[in-house]
Image (cartoon, rainbow, N blue to C red; front, side, top):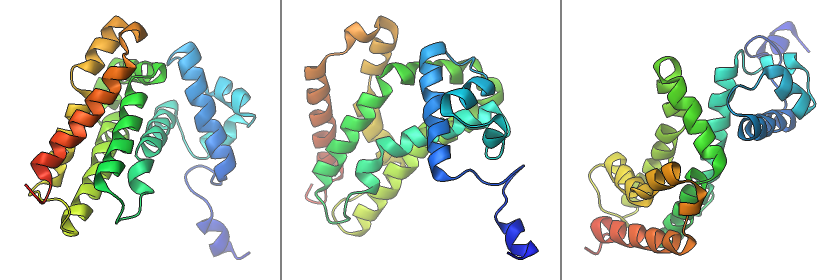
Length: 210
C-alpha cells in the first residue's frame, strides 16, 4: 500500500476501528452506563468490550464523544422504521412503527440514565448531545416527511416543524410522568392509544386529502 493510501485509512489519533469492534464498544458503553451510571471509565468500557483502551481512542478521543456516538447509534436504531422503509410504503404504517420505537426507547431505563448525563453536563456538552440525540431524530424524521411531501403523499410547508409536532404528540406529558414516577407509571395500553392518536392526528393535519 502506498504512503498516500495508508494515510487515507487513518482518522483521528489512530487507525479507524472496524465496525464489529465499534459496535461492541458502543454496546458495552450503553450496558455500563445503564448498570453503573454515567461515571464509567474508558478502562471499564475497554474491558467490557474486549478491546484495548487505545482502540477506543482511535475513534473517540474522550468519553464525551463516545457518549455522543452511543446516543446517535440509539437514534439510528429508533429511526430504522423510517430509514429502512421503501419510499412507497404506507406512511401510516411507517410512522406508527417509528412512533412505537421512539416511545419505547425514551421510556426505557437507559434513556433516563443518558438524560441524567446530558442534564448534568449540559453547560459544556449540551449542544453536542442534543445534536446527536433529539436533533438527529428530528432531522431523520423531517427528511422522511420532506420526501413524502415531494411524492405528494403529505402536504406541509415546514417538514422540520411537522416533525416536531409528531414527536411532541408521541412524547407529550407521558414522558415526564414516567421520568418522575418511575417505571410503574408505564401503561402499555396507553402506549397503543397514544401512538394511534398521534399518527392519526398528524395525518389529518398533514395528509394530502385534508
